[in-house]
Image (cartoon, rainbow, N blue to C red; front, top):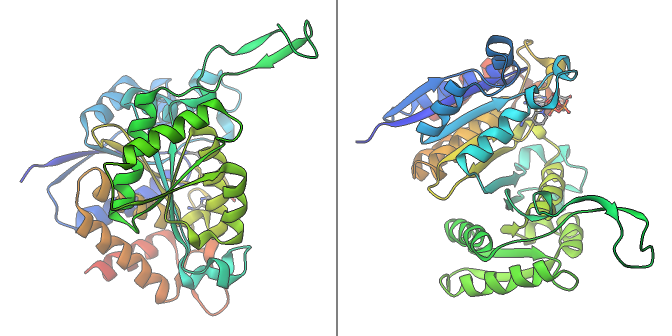
Length: 359
Ligand code: NAD
């Protein structure tokens, strides 16, 4: 059996505490994994004066997947931008070519009260948003400020950006969408603004072409404004959503908030060879760091995604997800998801409970 190398980058704040629990879970599976740890973010800056030191980047590049905790602390806010902890994530995304961001929004029935929506609308929610991560208006050139060359305010100062997508970029993210939907509920909704934007019409045409290779997946299209409404009106009507960088940025945060529990949400960023970076959707929570109260489940669920998407170990991923459901059903809760009638546990006790449920 091939041994897979996994880079473990715990980072800052609660990063080390939550990553430790996910590492315990990965080790308990008895898979041929080689876990190698390296500093990243503020922790790396303190040691090597760079948030993504060359040795950490090299380890990430050589590994099949990266398990990432979180980075950032207010104490680094005064540093020049290129040395801030958050630059490590951007550096990893760029160097590994991570173009597809997968963010599930799952609301376990036991946590339905945490959502701001009515339980019957959101309980049991299980959707996945796939956001293109390296193109679109966020990276398109030309951009900047200039004298308006035309329009009603010709000659006035203006700011401008460029929305653009090339055919290969749309094709590869569409494929990730179809492949992922194929492994889930076989429904893919492509979100765009094709009624107004040329880039979106182009996107839609390519997605329709790619769909020919996936007759088993039901494809629909939705304008982004409607998608934003449907996510709060009937979120369970979706299975997988695929969309561009800007629309995905907004919709994935909206979907995450439907669940009301930031400590529960994993994420994955993949490149063309399914090498990936897996991290919780939340930040480094410096306000609770070192207290042993952080919720490790988002990171444990990120490890499950790692097994599913980079290692093809879907059955092992399912095992972890089932174990997480089981500890919730047992009424165990870290402080962030605690409510009356449940049992409050620490970060490591939550890890213990998941390990026990796995066994
Ligand atoms: P945050 O997500 O770190 O925290 C927001 C709130 O949620 C806090 O009250 C925190 O205690 C709570 N929280 C977050 N994760 C939790 C968990 N697992 N268990 C229990 N409670 C949890 O966001 P923030 O406070 O805006 O940012 C803090 C730092 O994190 C900043 O330096 C920011 O730049 C950084 N950040 C990093 C990432 C990343 O590493 N990918 C993402 C977002 C923010």
